[in-house]
Length: 207
Image 1 (cartoon, rainbow, N blue to C red):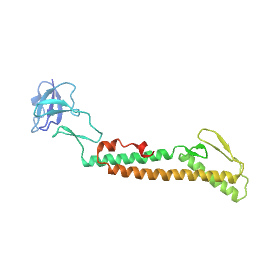
Image 2 (image 1 turned 180 degrees about the horizontal axis):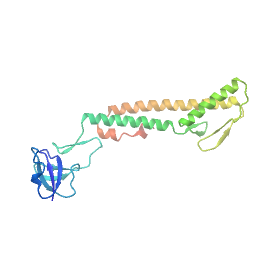
Image 3 (image 1 turned 135 degrees about the horizontal axis):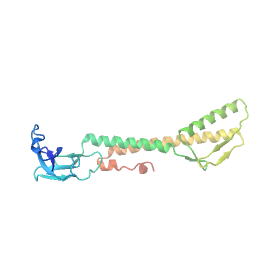
Image 4 (image 1 turned 30 degrees about the vertical axis):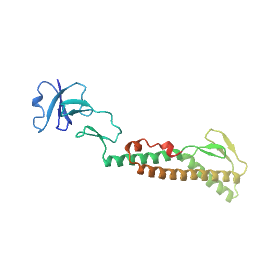
């Protein structure tokens, strides 16, 4: 026989499999026991102390809820509520960073704009500037787009202007994403319902 030992508020504090439940937990005050099914565990079930029955907890509304044994229902504290907001705001930042690394549409082309690509762009700008200043003939005036299509320029100045325009487009997108992030975080701070916080749409926030 399996027994659940529980406190007056219905919280299960231990399980016992055997024939002598009276010998278990006898050193603790206010602990009672009840014969239960084998599937019962201390996390998923609680005891109704009035009905003296073992009940399965319903699914938690969100990850941040905790079971209130006194009320026999899911509840949420102010601390958990704020933690949910902070986690969602962290997701906003992560999503913005992800979008910043996505290819960018520039000059009718999709161009890689992840961290390594941005370093390569700036490196090429520095190289071409030096070659122009020192009247060094520039070679390899080409760029491969995100679809692996090669684009070629005939003059170093045209190539430099294109690269600088690309850098400006990436910077403008970064600024746009920052603004959207701040706006989204303000919206999250204003929410007064935990479900609205958890279900806050990142895609909609950045659309």
